[in-house]
Length: 419
Image 1 (cartoon, one colour):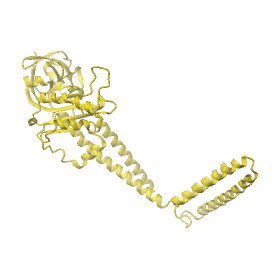
Image 2 (cartoon, rainbow, N blue to C red; image 1 turned 180 degrees about the vertical axis):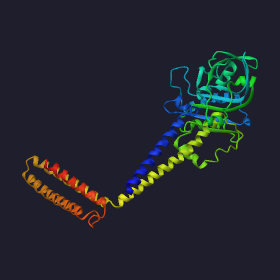
Image 3 (cartoon, rainbow, N blue to C red; image 1 turned 135 degrees about the vertical axis):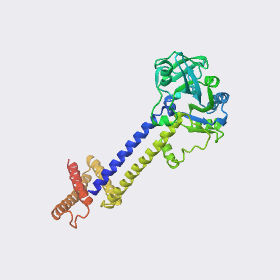
Image 4 (cartoon, rainbow, N blue to C red; image 1 turned 120 degrees about the vertical axis):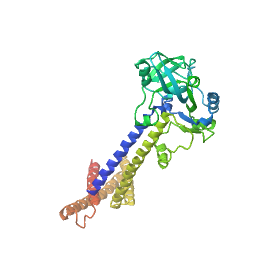
């Protein structure tokens, strides 16, 4: 009964481990801003790398452009070339952004909102839910576009369906290309996404708003060898460790990465750098903390299951009633006898009378021996049933079970040989 209870508890523990593993994987896969590499390359040969800068890092658009011009040469040196015949195909894609404030007005009202000035393909990395319209790219020739959230749309126009409408930023007309739904939840609000937000080009924020400087850069590029992309980006943009932070997003929520965070739990949230993370990075770090706790419980449940399995195996091994040597010698003897029978049968089939006679003599003792062993097994079984399970002849339950299996196996073997 005790073994049954332990077995059930081990099964429940392993089931809980599987459930927590599924939850952790689901939460990790649900972070779109961290999974750009999977969307960009289905073969898993791309890596997403993010850089975060302090105000003193001095990262400018010119520095970003300089880095972009060096990427193709680095990939060529690593023997990575474009294989697609499509002239518009790209090996890599990147984006950068800056936080700030901006005033947006319409014929109806005016709104002062938090703003993110974007460059590159920002919305490829951050596919926000569109309520109407479409995204724009920081690479567009015209920089007079913007995307607003639903709060700004209602304050400016009284509706969400305002794609194509015109707003004014610093007196300059800008076209609203789309309206996005602002993410909600305890983590997002704590991360700083708790007020009206407008996405404009980096040029617009710099010229017509309050720009706090580029604080974020991200790229997806080929990763021909492990950590090639991470090491290259860190070498080029992350030279100052006090002013920059570089991380690899692709494996951020993997099981091994989460294991490494367990010893850092409680201290990793202490930011000793003068870096203000954008809201999506704060959300990502929040999920890292949650998944670290989930991983800790995963390990505890798995450890209990493994230890219990080893204990039960040790008990079974101690009372198994046989040794590996005995089983090996028995199997070896059976193999040798079977080989000898096959040889004798082949000789007898060729008409060798002496071999046929020897075959009969060879098989008779073995059959007699098996019958004698079978009778002895049955005698022991009857004796155990008569004397009860606590008799001296049956001190170990596993031996009783083994004898039954051996007797049944011998009956089957005899039937096969008679056939």
